[in-house]
Structures are given as C-alpha cells and as structure tokens.
Image (cartoon, rainbow, N blue to C red; front, side, top):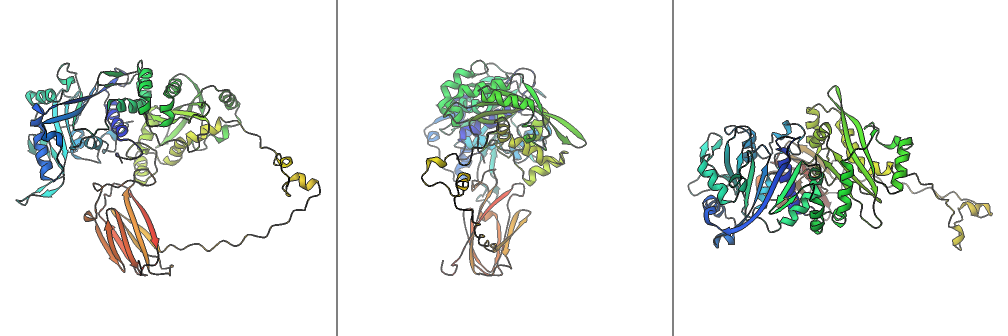
Amino acid sequence: MFDRTDYPYTETFVREAIQNTLDARLDPNGAPAIIRFSFYSDELGARRAFLEGAMGFRSDADFPSIEEWSANKINWVTIEDFNTKGLDGKLDDRLGNFWNYWLNFGVSNKENEGAKRGGRGIGRVTFLIASRMNTVLALSRRSADDVTVACGMCKLRMKRTADGSVRTTHAYLADKETGDVFQLHQTLNFSSSLASAFSLNGYVAAPRKSGLALAIPYPHADLRPEGILASSIEHFAPAVLNGSLVVEVDNITLDATSIDDIAKSVAPHIHTRSIGADVRRYLELLRVALAEMSELHVDAKKGLGGLREDANVKKLQERCAKGEKVAIRIHFEIPRNSQQLSANLRAVVARSPQDAVPIDRLFREGMSLPEVKTSTPGELDLVLLADEPNLAEFLNLCEGKAHLDLLESKEIKAKLEARGYKTPVPIKRFVKGLPNELRLLLTPDITEPERDVFDDYFALPDEKSEKAKNKGGKPDVTPPPPPPPPPPRISPVLMETLGDGFRMKANPEYGDWPINISVTLAYADGTRSPAWSPFDFAPSDLSTLTEDCSFAWTKNKLTAKNCGAAFNIEVVGFDARRELDTHIKVWKNAQND
C-alpha cells in the first residue's frame, strides 16, 4: 500500500511526513507549519548507544546485517516540524494519541478531530519502510503540557527464544514496561543526548516551543533531497502557495516566494509527466485556483449535465475556447443528519498547449489525491481544490488508506453513515466525476458532420449512403437477423464472504467436473491488482479447510486441483479490518495437470 511500483517511495514518504505536519499545525490561521528534512553521514559515535539494542534484536530475528554498522559508519535523515502541536496524548493511556502512534496500527484519533488528511492509523509505516534497519526514533516537545518525550520503534519478527519466552514483532525505545504501555526516558539529559546525537537542531541550537522530530537511520538510497523537493511541489504546492506550509531540505527553503525557481530546478525529478514537463504551467493554474472567482450553484445529485444551456456556462465555454483560464467556485450541499451542509470546490480549466499532456489534479486541504482524475482529459488542463471544511471532512472519510483515491468500500460507507451521511455515494461520485464532467461542460457542442461528406473521394461509394439512394442505387435490403446469443456461462464456483475470510463451494448448476482453481489473494489498496507482502499475511497464519479436492499454497496463491461436484474450500484468519481482494482462475484437464 505504501511501497508500490506505480508511486516512487519518495512520494509516499513525503506525503505521509507533510500530511502529519499539516494536521498538527498549531494555528490554521497563524504561522505556517514548517517541516525540515536533513541528511547526515558520520561515524557511529554517540549514536551507537541508541541503536545497538535494536541491532542486537535484529540479529536475534535473523535479519541481514547492515554493512555500514559493521564498519562503524552511519547515515541518517531527520524530519523536524515546527509551529506544530507535537505528539500529544496521555502517556499512560494505551488508546490515546501517543500510544496509538507507536503501538496501535490501524487505530487513529485523527478521525475525531474534524477535517484531517489522515485518520486510518497506518501511514506512519512509511517511516519504518524508509529505514534499511526498519527503525525510527522520535523526540517531541508537546504544546499541550510542555513536556519533552522520546520514543522509538524497530520492526522485528515474532519468535520463541531458547528459554521458551515469545518476543513480539517490535522493540521500543523506552525505560521499562508499565502496564499495557511503556515508561519512557523523560529526563532532560536523555532527550538532550538524543537530540545532539542525531542533530535534531530544532531541539539543540534553537529550541522551538513545540513540535515532533524523527530520526531515520540508514535510509534507502532513493531518498534524496531533490526527490523530496520534487514530491513536495507535486503533492503539496497549494499549501506552499497559500502560505500554510514551508518545506526545508538541507539548506534549501521551499515557500511561496521560492517555489518557482526550485520547481524549475527539480522538474526532472517530478514523477507525473504532465507536471514535470511544464511545472510553470502547473503553478500558474494553482495560483488562479487560489484567487477570487465566480460561483456556480449545482445540485450534486443531478450533476453538471443540465447546465450546458445556461447562459453563463455558454460564456465560460467561449472563454475556454479562446484559450483563457476559466475559474469556477462550484457550490453544492452535502446532506448530513437533518442538515444541508454548504460545500465549495474551486476549479480551473484551461486549454493544454499543443502536443502537451493535460494536467489533471485534485487537492484536498493542499494535498493531492492523484488518482482522482479522468481517463480522457482531451486537450484541457484541470485543477480542483477542496479546502472548505465540510467538504474536506467528507472526502477524508471517502479516501483509501493511502489517500490516493475516493472509494466506496463497505468500510467507508459504514464510517460515513455512522457520522450522519445517510446518502454519501451520490456526493462522492459527483466529486470524483468532476474531472470528466467539468471538461465536458466547458467543451462547446460540436455539430455532427454530414455522413456522406467523403463519398465523392472514393471510387465505390457506400450503397447505403443518402447520395447512392438518391441516384437510384440498390435499395436497402433488410439484413438477416443476428444469430441468437450463446447461453450464459455457468460459473463452477460459488463464493461466500466470511467475517475474516471466505468460502468457495461447487455450483450445483455446473456439471463438467473435475476442475482446477487458483485464487490469488491480497488486501485491497484501491488498485486493480493490489500488491501482496508477506508482512500482510502468510499461509501459516491462516486456517484452510477443504473437501473433494487437493490444495497447496504458494505465497499468496491457493491452488486447488481435481475439484469435484462436492468440493468446498474455507480460508479464515485474515485481518477483519481490511478488505480482501480475490482473483479466481478456473481451468480444465484436471486429471492430467
């Protein structure tokens, strides 16, 4: 989900880091949230004391060694944010914000804090993935109580030791266990030593009032300053332009005044081709989207189709055809409980330069949702900004776990309905369909060409053409009726969803037995072919029961052979909080395979 081939890892890393910083901004109307990425390389020195325990546990878990550690070398990257709240929550509450961050993956208190960009409680895994030793250290000065706390995490493997005890999947930087949480090192000497060892300069040279700092040892080689700047511009440019976000990478500061020059220099590192090829055009569209514009009232259930004949829309079509940038504030209402909440969405449409790939982007509260786009952009650029709180909160609940798209899973519908959105699907589909609907709305009607316009250019005109009929051509002949369609195919497999798995059984209406079946399984991530990781699940984690067939597991693929008319396969043990994606293949010649 956060380590995908279609999104370079730097993008998911930057998206999660900046999203967390914007969520923790102290004053939405005050000083900008500042996030600083810094890269370092040195001898192990004072850093050894903080990491050697984790390295020992990694060795016990049979993880590969890290060459630089053996050579007494280390490189690391730090992420510090300022004008933010820090990592808050009670230090003795297992279900509070603080320990949710460290211990409770899949649980987050963000979703109870209004219109936030996060809320699924899993995005922080990107920081563990970023480290080749799967480790992250943190130091936070909290605005709520002015307390400075340190913690850390190292991902391991569960195993039983020689003395019979069981070690869990993670180790933590803490003083000792206390109840269902840990007692942290909270002395000034410990936090100062951690800050000094890992150059957390916001806590050493110029201490800030509050914020969160992360240190990621042995980062992957593809995490580089130019990639971080490029991803910040691609995914958070509106937040930079409107002054709510400042990004510092080593000695470079990305803000509203420097973004044009920096964007030009890092354009080759921007992943989306349409943006990287003409980043100046991209920023111009966003600046227009942040300015004043006319308003268009829409019924979200009916969509934009009924507005094509509106006089104001006709003027917008003419302006777009002339090459002007057309800016519209789309106003509609979202039903919640017994209220109709006001919602606004800013849109800018403009003709793409000749032979240029159209720009197509939707942002929520300054962060892009790159998969909300049309498959047929034609020759029009489009950017959409959803910053209004009512709409931002609604869309956050509609997003998938990686915040790339707007989905309609059972989990999302249940979450929306629990918050009073009784008919959420039309609103979600309206927003997701806007990249296509707006382009259609602002494209003038095209008169259909005469069907016989090319008849005079060919030696053998179509005998059915209007001109051929008028010249005494052959009369129309009623074509023979098409052959009847083949009977519908009967699936040999019936599927049933269980609470933490699924059941497959023979379809009694099917009669051509035996068959072979293969089922490829992965947790849904919003794509057509979701990726599987052995950290998601393994066959040994699951319970598999079968009848009238033989089966075998290969990674995440279950293969059942010689399935007869009474076959039954039940697999349980999956994470009930995640949606399971299954791809089924059936083939014959079972006895000879």
